[in-house]
Length: 124
Image (cartoon, rainbow, N blue to C red):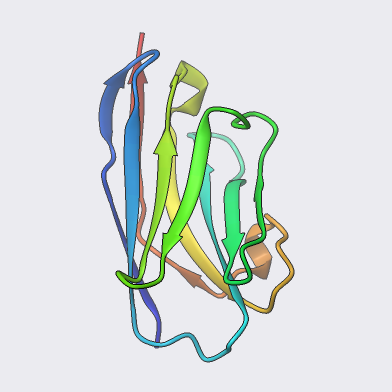
């Protein structure tokens, strides 16, 4: 069983930076997998932010390109999201997720495992 635990959220001023981490425990039951960050603001649908697969392929939502960077430290079994130049619209609960297979689609229903989330609040 794969377990995901997020950390690193909190309040931050507009224009500031935060780094989210997701600790992965357990073994992925597939040699090919992808991991991603999703977010959900109150009253809005969950949306994919960034994803990365173990073959190195990565992708970002247009709204965060150039500001967010996703990385996966295989040795530490940790997924990270470096968020720079944060804006009020980035305020949301951020979730770490994992899926089998090598196709990177930032669509929530395609992901098999989810963390509990960490809150990011950008203050203006």
